[in-house]
Length: 127
Image (tube, rainbow, N blue to C red; front, side, top):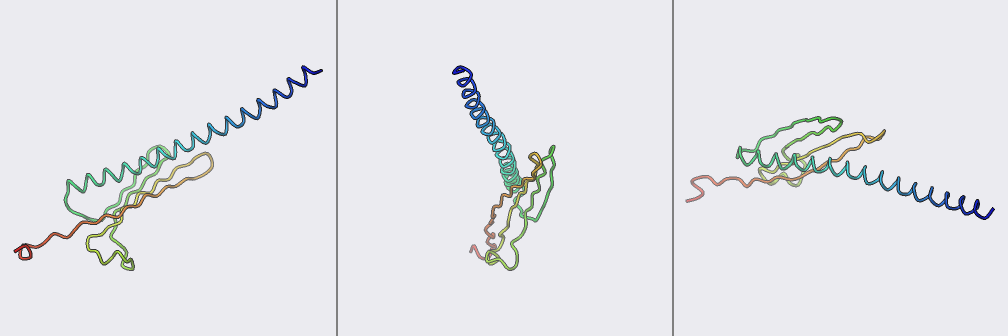
């Protein structure tokens, strides 16, 4: 009888431990997927910066990309007229939005950066 009680207690303890371990692994996998998507968004911002460096000219643009179930959209926009930042010439908002599905839940991450390009001085101002 004592052995049966010990086996039942051991079974209950192992069930609790395995349930905890399963939820921990599930959380790690979900966080890993989210982090992978965030790095993909960040890489898109880096690629946009490299493209700007090669073009040497700012312009509004937008692009959408879909890889598997991951949708990513990029936009480079001028500052809104009502914004305080509007007083700076050549100020832009870079925005990357990523959307994906985890199980039955739709997830979304947004990365925003501000881009400022100092206006070039004219020839007569330099002298």
